Amino acid sequence: MCKLEEKILKVDELIRYNWKTKEYGRAEFIFCPIWKRGKIIKLHIYPMQQPDAKYFYILDVTANSKYICPYSWTHLGKENPWPWQFYWCKEHKCMSIKIYVPPNTNTLRITTGTSLNIIFEET
Image 1: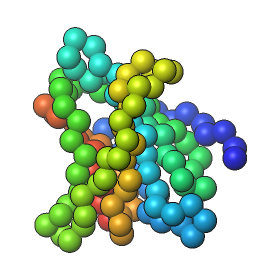
Image 2: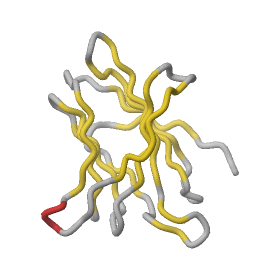
Image 3: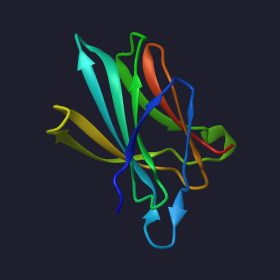
Image 4: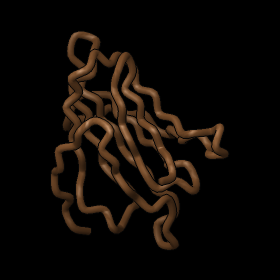
């Protein structure tokens, strides 16, 4: 497997992915939020089980986000994302989250506000 390159992500910028491959199964992402004084200041995003992935992403959060909310558009028939593992990341010194992407989605979008919204959608 090749090393991933760092890419700086902007709020509302899209990350495209294939939700499922024959060799690797369902795609997932690792999210490492960096907190300071109760607010998220940075988010590291790593694609997993995605053979065509070229980048890992870093998002500098300028809003006063205090929560992380992963979701998808269930009113459009999409399933909710599946956070399945929480663990301590030694590299970033934070609690990391592994999330399986919902079926039939192909885009990840992050919006900020009081909460840091991780939105899985189909575009």
